[in-house]
Image (cartoon, rainbow, N blue to C red; front, side, top):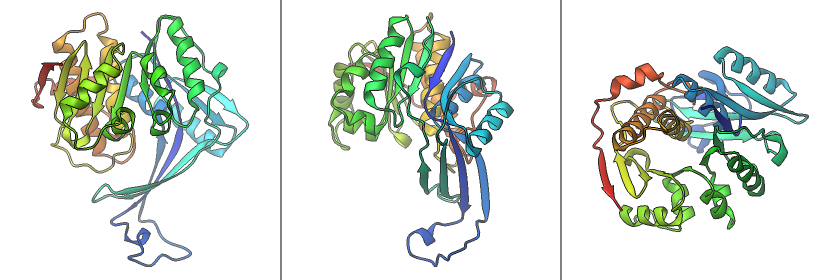
Amino acid sequence: MKIFCVGSATLDIFFIFKNLDFLKGKAKIFEKNNVPEIFIDIGGGALNSAFNLKNLNLNSEAIIKLGDDFVGKIIIKKLEEKEISTKIIKTKGNSTISVIFLNKNTGEKYIFTYRGNEIFKVNEIPVSFASAYLITTGATPLFVWENVIKKIKKKDNFVGLLPSKNFLSKKAALETVKNCDFVVLNEEEAILFLKTKKDMDRLIVLKKFNELLKNVKFKVITFGKEGAYLIHENIVYFVNAFKKTKVVDTTGAGDCFASTLFGFIIKNINKLNKEVLSLALKLSAINTAYNLREIGAQTGLLKEKELLKFKKVDLGLKIFEI
C-alpha cells in the first residue's frame, strides 16, 4: 500500500552552542556574534515522515508546497540527495525556514520559524484510491482538512492524523478527528483536546480518549520519557521510552514515533494481532530514541534492518482492556 505524507517542508538551520545564556540576558549579545557549530538539513512533518517510511522499506511519497525561491531550491536538492519521492505543489510565495538555537549539552532549544506559503487549498491535494495518508495539519485551516479527509475517505483510504495544537483548539476539530483511522497526540495536545489535567489518572484519560473517538481504529497518546499508549479495539498497549541513548535534540521526535508506528501498522494491516501491535509500538519508541541522539529531524532514524535487531528489547510492555 502506498503512503502519502501530507504536510510541511522546511529548511532547518541549527546554530549549535554549549549554552544559551546569551538568549536569557545572562551573557552579552553583540551586533555581530559567532556561531561555534552549524547544521543544515530538511525537516517538516511530511518530509520527516516520508523519509522515515522510506527507511522502513515502505512506498512513501511526500505531498508538500514550496515557493519558487532560494530556500525551495535547496530543499529540492536535499530531496534528490535523500531520494525522497515527492509531489511538489509550487507557489509563487516563499518556502518555510526554521532557525534553531540548540544547546548540544542539554537539548534545550529555541526555534524561530518563518512560515512561507505552506497552507494547502482543498483541491491541491491529490486523492488516490485504496492507499494510506498520514497528515500533519500544521498551519493549514481546519475546514481544508475537514474537506480533504472526507474526499480521501470516500476512496477507501486509510487516514492517519497528527494534529497541531492550533487544529485541536477549534470546536469543529472533533468531527474531523473522528473521521480518521489513526490519531496521535502528545501529552500537551491530549490535555487540550480531552480537557483533562496534567496530573489526572492515566486510566481515566485513556478511557475518555477511547470513548470520545470510539470509531477511530488506532488511538495513541505519547508521554515523552514516561512512555506511550496505543488503544485498539478497547485494548491498551503501553511501552516505556527507550532510555539507553542520550537526548541531544528533540526536533522531529513526534514525527518519528508516529510515522514508525503508522508504517508498521500499514505493513501488517492484514495480519494485525497483539504481538504485531506490541512490536510496532516498541520499535516506534526505539526509533525515536535513536533519532533523539542526533541533531536534526532525520539524522538518527534507523533503517528497518537496524530497527528489527531490537525486537527482543524489554520496554516494560503492558497490555490491558478498558
